[in-house]
Image (cartoon, rainbow, N blue to C red; front, side):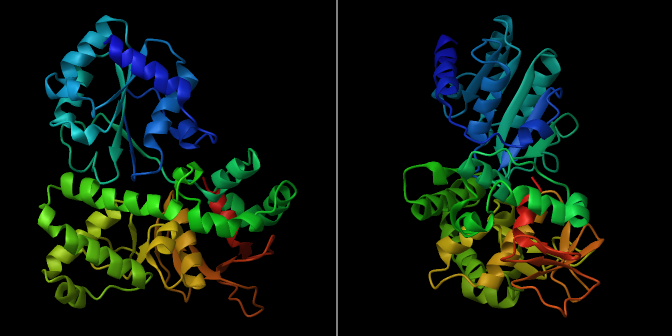
Length: 391
């Protein structure tokens, strides 16, 4: 146990988290079992350590453990948790949960047998904590850690503490909000950089961002999809090829029959692969209202704009990039569907949007227009960058 405490102490003392993630304040920490999901690279480990540092310091009542540790090849989580509680432990932070066999079953045993213990664990976005785990679905509180929003990126780059806004606040008061933000920073000076390399926290590292992101994407395929979904390694090349085809054509409606021929597999398998790529946070699927998987999506988008820049070697179409940013920003907290009223997106079945690159006097009064390249807007024309302030 002492070795775990020593590792915990070192990690907490050296954790580097220049931006406080908004999810820290959204979680109800009173829950005894909390699952934090997120795609590879968004900072789940840093988030756990920052929580430990902020709420416990180096107090031994909190302990961070990682299932990468070979200790857990010969010892169970339950016996470790019991020993931790005997020594006064109250909060256990568990990383790399999927690497432990029967993790959900033992988490439930810990929950039932150790009523004074709080457990916070991280998991891949591919893990279906509620839908596919009967052991814990009635007791776990599940949250999603997302990549940096444009707001968080600005706060980091400019050492600011800009607040987030709800969709209703933006729609009703965007002119005042924009003036307030623009009095402190020039958002348009940073927007292109964010679209290119601002979503994943590892842009802070002194390494080539594109190569790092490619490595992360391959880990998503090899670990988060193949390992967790128990897919044979021989199918990896098919999934990689499918992702590349979809990413290079996104946003577009998928031709599943043609994809089936190119990948040399069945239509059903193509749809399953697309779902796995969505769960891994590599793709976003856009449906009409009332439709969802297993129906074919109307359009497939890259999950975020950074991914587009890594895979599209011939350059990224500006309109596609702007729509992808908007979808990603709204998808974090809202239901996004294809718009039926000559727009691009329907949000929460009530707000209809078109994403445009310039103000146009002929814009439809029935639509909201998310406009690129403007500092402030008027009426139903809203600066596109402002939707990066939703979280």
